[in-house]
Image (cartoon, rainbow, N blue to C red; front, top):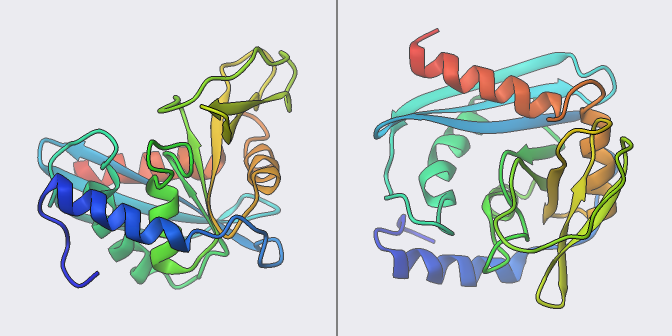
Length: 217
C-alpha cells in the first residue's frame, strides 16, 4: 500500500487485500505490556492516543498522543481509514513496545472481516484485538449476568466475536480478534484488563488521553 486511499472504492480494495494477511492464532507469549488505542474528534481535528500499561499491574508505563486532521471522510465500515494514520504515528513515538494492541473498535466483527483492530495488527505485526462498546455486525444470545459470562457474536453462520460481561449486570463489551490472536485469548485479555469497570483500563486511559489531547491538556 504505497498511497493512502482517497475514495471508498480504493479503501475497500485495501481492506480486501490486507484481510488475507490476518492470522487467527496465538503466535506469541502473553504480552508483558498492553496498549489501549483511541481517537477523539472535534470536527476534522483529531487526537490519536496510545497508552501502554503493565499487563499484570495495569500501571501506565508509556503514552503518546498525536494531534492532527482527518484524512478520510466518515463512511461506515471504513472508519479505520480516519484513525489508522494518527494511531500509527502515536505508536511510533512510544519508547515501550506493546505486545498487544486493544482497539476501541472492531476486529473480525466487521462486514468485510477487517475492522480497525485487524488493520492495525496487519500493518504493525503486533497482536491486536477489538473491544467495542456496541456491535457493528452480528447477533448473540442472552448471556448470564455474572462477570465473565459470554455469548458468541454470530454474523450469518460465522462466529465473528463474543459478547463479554466484564462486570456483574452491566452491558457487555463486544470482543473480536484483530490479528495474531484467538478469540479465547481476546476474551481473557479483556477480562483481565477490566477488573473494576465495564471497559478495559487500556480503553479508559486512551479515551482520557485523546480527549485531553484535543483540549491541549
